[in-house]
Image 1 (cartoon, helix red, strand yellow):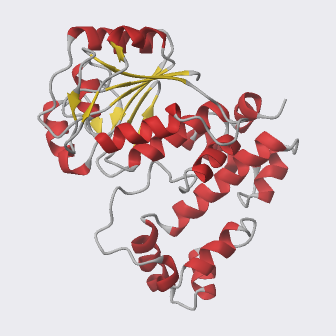
Image 2 (cartoon, rainbow, N blue to C red):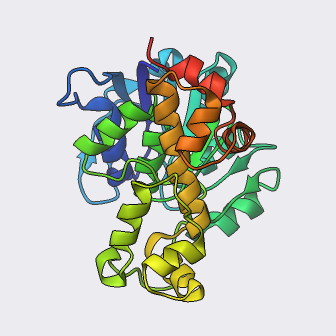
Length: 315
């Protein structure tokens, strides 16, 4: 992934465009991190109104999409303007030549109109998920996930989920260590699982006030230990039921999902950095056996541990 193009239309969502520009258009402080050829594209190169009262002028027309490895389509509050035949053709052609096409927030409506989401799983902002599903019955809408990747097409929920998806795409292209370093420059959590809920139904307490912060810190540095709900609840001096309820309220994920994601992140780093056998990686990150590690990798990453190492391991 070297060439990134973002597609905008009025009213341009300023926050999501800013996220993509920060991720892919801003030179990193660390010169060893990837740099991209970056373009903001639209049907016409003229000032476009944003969602927040100012204008932006795209740097390129839609012809620029022909060279992009990653195309990100932004959206606006529905009704989303229908995409032009030129944009639909460019998006379909990009997938056909092996590029990745992604949508942030209601940009999913554009991908669906182009036919790229038929038969695929996709998400969008929770407030528009029902409308999206009714308008596009051939799409399997997942209304309560931060982002969904289905083959060469990806979609994300609203606002900050664009950052989660962008970091996931960087992780897929360059490995976990690079994504972690980019996230650190941006002072953002390095990884939130795409399966994490878009929102919680109760106010989210600060981790320290909830009493969970020290427990999560300890768990993240002891991933090979017993991290069952009962064990973590005992460390937090809570009953398992209370601990599980407060954990979901504070993090948006169940304890089991959070632990699994932490262990998979560590496994990715070990596979990329060390020459340990897969069985040893599984034991060190707390997944127990190579079979368990392979099963989780296939289901959640779409590849085997060996394939991940071959793609991202130190040469």
